[in-house]
Length: 115
Image (spheres, rainbow, N blue to C red):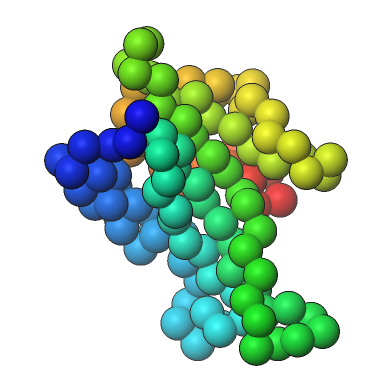
């Protein structure tokens, strides 16, 4: 399932608010930044850093993923553990809105997303 144009605009608006709140200061964004990717039914938060061996290459490190389940009209929230697999975020495995997803990721109460 791909998001409709209206749904995608809503997600982009929520992502802009989230990024405004959690992106690092402008002067260090070339060394560390945060972005949001929308693909299929997933919204993914990624950390952007230059490669240590080849600084001109940017590496994307996944931080959080939310998958919309249309049947249940909810978002499933995941975090990437050190085994490089997505795991359900057990303190809050589901959210009713994309805004709630971004609020949980931004709060990061268990230090799972941004360590």
